Image (cartoon, rainbow, N blue to C red; front, side, top):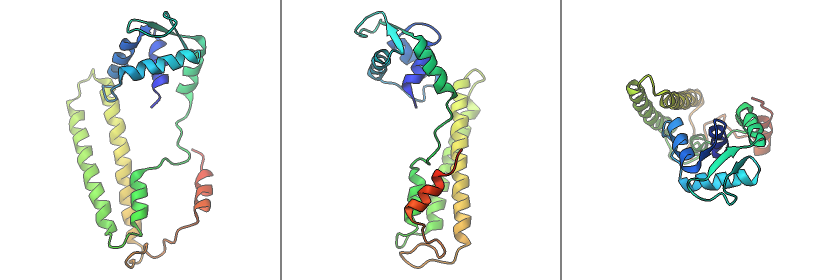
Length: 199
């Protein structure tokens, strides 16, 4: 999450002071990502140093110091809004790594491991679904965040289901080895193939 660009977006509406920016950021994002006021002022000072905002007070200090976005800041904000999400290379997903390494851990019941994670995620989805039913029509920000989380978790559950089905089609493994037919490719080869994907 880019706090600096979110602050630029808020400043694009007009001049604001630091505490106001913190309050508006939390309000606009459904109070899902609370900000430390110190983080806000540190970010504003860096934005001012980079020429993206300017303030009434030269040293950028004081709770009532008003900040204004500069034309350079507006250009930076526009570039950020239009920039596609960075999905290459794949992020270090803890669950994916956990499953990959578990394939070679002696005594691990892979189907049970996958299902335990699936059960937990389904429970979380149920909680989000319950929360969604309580959201009022005017709480658009909260609704968007909840929808994003539901879609994200649903994708993880689908990956677990696909992984479970794929592993079940393979011959049984012996203790401490991956399922037969899953000999790993060398890391460079994997890296090159993944890096060749353009999303």
